[in-house]
Length: 451
Image (tube, rainbow, N blue to C red; front, side, top):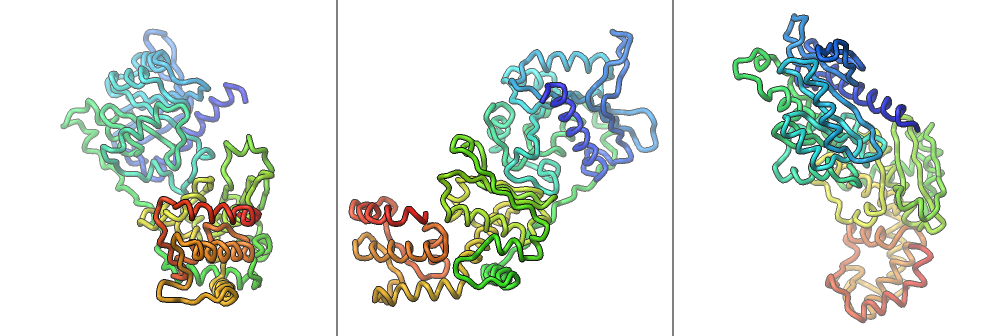
């Protein structure tokens, strides 16, 4: 893509973003007091001609025709970092066209050099780094930066990293911002600080009625038994009763998946390093899986079941899209519902996927058969007890390997399912003993086919 086209697309993206912010009354001032323009010219006495700015916002008092505050925005889609000269040039242009209440904002998709950031702070201008939605791990239906209302001082380092780190990847926030006195991810906080900067206490602009913040709708809490029930209902609705759940068949039969585009993209190991495991997009509805010749079937099935969890649990009300990375599978045991929207949705999708791939009754039946076949019974320590003794380790690895094969999942998924159902008690210490490691080596060849 040409540099000009990339720049044009960024300008339109910023224009549309702020236009939506204004029209939905999430901007600093009421929508009837704001006018937004793309590439409007403002007269410069020095040039005796107009200087055209990428985006501009004129803020007026209610009923007035002349703007009281002028926001001038420059958008840069650089393949290099932003240098001090870039922001100095933009600042000089804004000084030529406006009175004291002209507020410049420099927005870039690239990282800013520390000197550029320092210059912006010294001139009390706004600066932002913009992350395009397709690059976010989670894209919310309602802009995260527009819905975010504050931050703690502890977040300063994270915002600084987002502004200056060339390789920084944002998970959910489109904007990392620095106003004259604050660093934040909140557009509301940013604009209020920028527009009030240098304005006298008795200035009419301070008396302007500002829109009441609109809080995003909360993700409802779902009890664990209800997640179990919802997963079983999904299987019943798709008329699937086999132990090894056919997820493609589920997608073909479930009403909520009708019209969904399912795409499996084969990539090389080198390409996979920069890609997620999977991505779900809700409009249009699609799930894309990125697979290599080294893909682990159990991991890939859980990844797809997780994305289906987002769909079947109605998370499309809150998400536009979501990516799942390798680290999400590695850490899914530690994801808990802490009440925040993203953690709650991730926890629910993980638990739903576990229940979907290992339906309760078949799973208990298969587990019970394994115990009977090996002559095991609960001696007061749990149906399946594992410590560092070789006999217990052998039973643990043999049973979990069998369940992995029967249900087509990873060992981690089996262990978490057993633990959540209180069928497994693992008292091994964090540091494995030599005996435990020897037992693990004994089973690794046999289990590798299914992990």
